[in-house]
Length: 302
Image 1 (cartoon, one colour):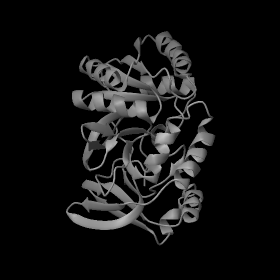
Image 2 (cartoon, one colour):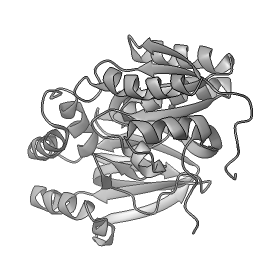
Image 3 (cartoon, helix red, strand yellow):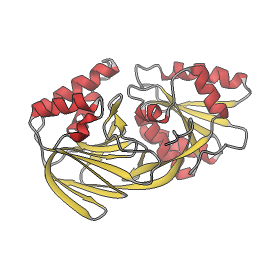
């Protein structure tokens, strides 16, 4: 779907995660708010108390016709997207978390002046999303050594972002034993011992890793990456290659596409969506095409 203008005067409700990043989300938003109000915009700011509060407040604001601004990281974006999607509203992002991978993929920066102009004048872009157990994930759903790492990352909030992502990865690898997965993609079944399975819409996570390079936010299908079981030392090499996207050429990596994926595993493994643990297997993930409207720079022309 092409980018479109948002016709009526914009009112904003910002939902701020007070613990995002290094707890600077509120200050980041204050700088943007001052510029919006100078331009005559009506702005409401709400500090979120929990993921559920964020989802509910986002839905309420969207139903009032406000642009709902997610001020935080990828987890906050996921919660706001869940609420906005249910209300068929419009959201925006002020990236203030540790990863900010969806904002980076959309071309949204962190400069307050540029963010204010984007919020006031930017077009609305429709993107696909993933739905898993009622959660709307604009980015990725993943289960395996990387979801184990995410569990560790969320326990190490005081470390700098880039450091914690790399340290957690090493710690996760050192304690990981690959289980057996059964993955069904649009009815096609794959059973394998695997290190991880990533069901991707954006393809980006882990503070800049382009983990599934073919993934595109608005191409009408999801991308699945299955990484078969390999020695631990190979996983470390895999992560180094993932920084450049060259890991997809490795023999243990397979890529598939579809619109509906189910994952079952022979032991309990955490399931993560856009930076947070949301449950355990088994899961079913559906692609919802062009289901979320977000203020963002125009999509690249390819």
